[in-house]
Length: 132
Image 1: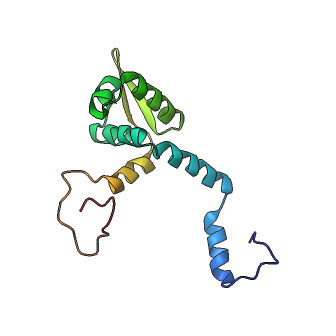
Image 2: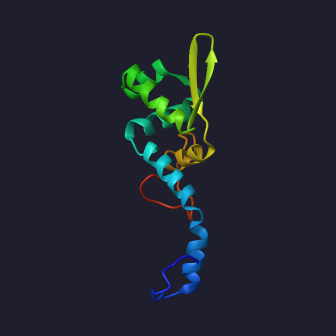
Image 3: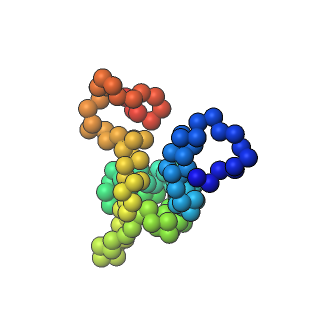
């Protein structure tokens, strides 16, 4: 356990569990960087759009989001650098798709598929982002 030995703890077992769960601080930093990339509304809109389209071009993403092709390209460059999207060339057209399974799952939490059953099931969470 890496806590200050001079600090009096209320519940040392819970502190130990939290320290174990926290693990490598480098991993926390990596996730913080990924979350900062996803936190931008334009980039998040691109990720959600890509998720539902499965694969989509820059031009089509620009039409969906109301962004310019240049702004979409710049955002996709950053998303690609962070490993969140990947590309597939189809002739002269480059199509983008999600490359990160965790982001895929997060999008399901934030924006469930429209074809998902619209009624709330007992025991399901409610509140922001549940769309129920």
